[in-house]
Image (cartoon, rainbow, N blue to C red):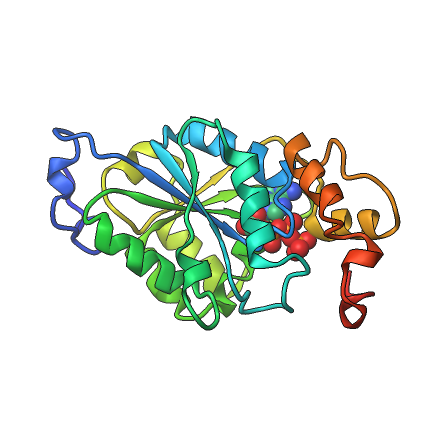
Length: 244
Ligand code: ATP
């Protein structure tokens, strides 16, 4: 049987125990969620089922490192997210990024999760657009020391073809879910999911124009958006209007 070292991967203590002891496998879905929409929820559910994830932590960021401040407040984004995942087996919200000051770096989030989950496989779930920007993330090379990366193919976005990220994919990619189960971190898996061409930007723009978010977000999320006027032009502070 080939060992991790034979396969050119870092040796991970406990790897040989994996076939004997079934560890929980945990998903992590981070985002701005301004607002959470069906383009997040359906792919995440399909990845959860395909990988057999035991639970998925939905982690809204406080301060996105690579973009302007969200339109909805942290409390509103959290409330919409809680409403969206309520009652979905295995899905739960995690507020660690909202509680942390400063930019919400994923590497810090994974590090704090890793302190709680010593050997459990951790799968960072990303859309392809987010994955393609990975090499711009803070300390991005450490991410695979802390978690696997599972990429949902997203309409209009192809796998990386060149550069450091393409090299990383060539080295770490796997088609086999068992490879994720066999170690806590370090592999990349791409998975086709139902393609839903929905973005939060588009939803904010529609609502600001007086249209409905119905059928793009869960009903409960639509109600919160409407009741609190979150993205209507009147609900967006004057200095933030036009940012959509
Ligand atoms: P915005 O339009 O404000 O940039 P967004 O809709 O892309 O937002 P984010 O909260 O920024 O949503 O995304 C969080 C994660 O969800 C990212 O990994 C992103 O790739 C993924 N994602 C967002 N929309 C989709 C979609 N329609 N299909 C698959 N993945 C998606």
